[in-house]
Length: 229
Ligand code: OAD
Image 1 (tube, rainbow, N blue to C red):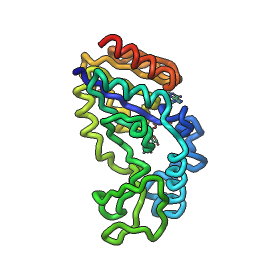
Image 2 (cartoon, rainbow, N blue to C red; image 1 turned 180 degrees about the horizontal axis):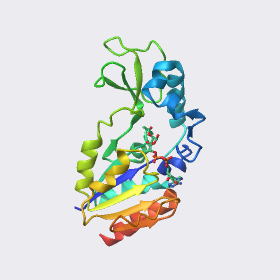
Image 3 (spheres, rainbow, N blue to C red; image 1 turned 135 degrees about the horizontal axis):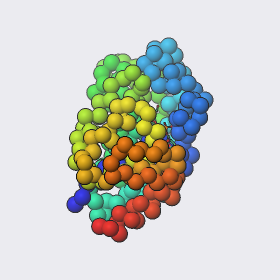
Image 4 (tube, helix red, strand yellow; image 1 turned 60 degrees about the horizontal axis):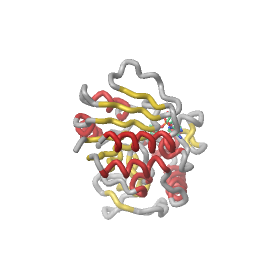
């Protein structure tokens, strides 16, 4: 079976009603990224950070996967599919994809603020100041904030190294190290980029740019790949 690696960003969830990052003046749901997505923000105002992610988690219970998330799941009929997502929502899971690696964490999980390995599933529930891990430390969102290491990046790079086909959907490709994953694809790998604002990418070999929204562009590409195979 040929291996397809899919790298997704905020754009794939836009049509489900979750705002992207860079389409809204550098603000994330009306907050600056420094306030709510950095270790400094957490130290300065943990109540605000918890409230912000509690709201994101609540929003997650109100949104559903769109045609793009759903179409990716059909690829599994004929391909070995690995999804690598920068998104902290769980819409790929809700759509039924089997192999999903979250690069920037997951809203439905929290972890100890002193032991990164103590991770807990909390679904859509809120956490507050005073909610602690089994060792007594405050719980925090299981999100990779700016300035923090991306623990899954090496495993993601190894996945991309084995791709026969790489599909990139709805990411501005400006946040590293995730944006650099494209360069781990083998020379023979066919690449597709689906994004209404995609750049030309003339320096990348074997790439097809599809300037369309994910909700229409992804189902069309999935159909094409299934017919080819
Ligand atoms: P961005 O907000 O930077 O980029 C979203 C991309 O989606 C843009 O290129 C848009 O053109 C595109 N887009 C918008 N609507 C779309 C649609 N309907 N279909 C397809 N594409 C669409 O989001 P990311 O690249 O995901 O990090 O941002 C990367 C990281 O920066 C995020 O994971 C987050 C953020 O700060 C963390 O939370 C650590």
